[in-house]
Length: 183
Image (cartoon, rainbow, N blue to C red; front, side, top):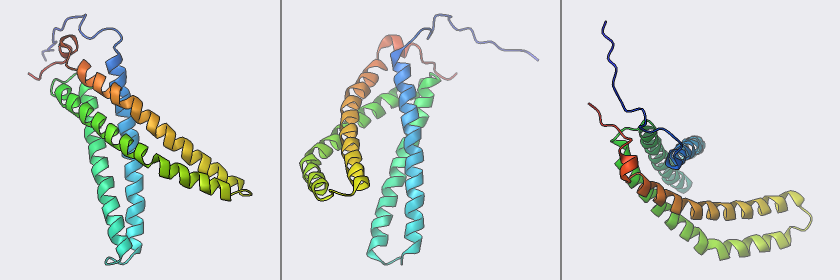
């Protein structure tokens, strides 16, 4: 049986590259998102089955379930694109560039919406904190919610330039040369 060996330059793709780390992080975050959306969709499905099909809450749960499935499919597509880039498949590079820009725009839009809702969230949480003098558990839950909101805003703010940088970096000729086409 003949053994076929593909001759590739030794220097191709060697060394540390920040873009690869970003792609791995993106893959891990997309996988985490898949798990979260799948768990939430399962909970919604169970709740929806308990309701009458023509009930108004059932329609709301159906809409939330549709969004979960859409996010799940998008996260899965992102996993496939990241895996293709990690394996340096040429088809994945331009697709991940587009996906990174679209994801950056989504982060910008959703972060802007969160920022727009911040005053109302701040007022509501401050009023609730003022009313919860004796209940330490609820106070702690509200403080945690505020921290989570701020953390989400900060992460979205950091993600936008990182994703745009990744998209740009995947188009640089030195990085483009590291990807191989199928034969």
